[in-house]
Image (tube, rainbow, N blue to C red; front, side, top):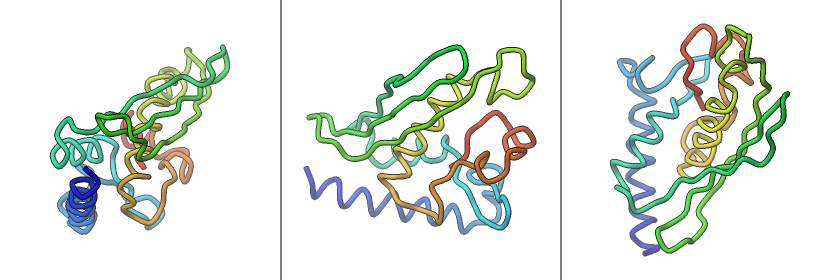
Length: 148
């Protein structure tokens, strides 16, 4: 199984690196913020599924949830339970806000934690920060999607 994982990790990394290097993938697969390219979580998930099929499990666990904030941890494992990577995300809540990061904090937090877990496994790009950590206006101005 580990040879299967190693080979497919290389394939996935190559595919993601190719996407990051293609200008015509801007806004579809990645966004540029302050001179750095950030892959969209949907892109990370798509490549993970295209390369590994359903041979890896991405699961999430709410670590903290109160009226003010939520923290979610996501983990990537093999079908037999072998740990591969994880990602943690925190979002603050404000159900009345027009900013989806605040009004839909749980969904956005889960998406961010998935992105961090997958990005940690695939190790592509120059940063593991989410776009909103670099530029708080990034999410509001781009879409509701988290970008890593």
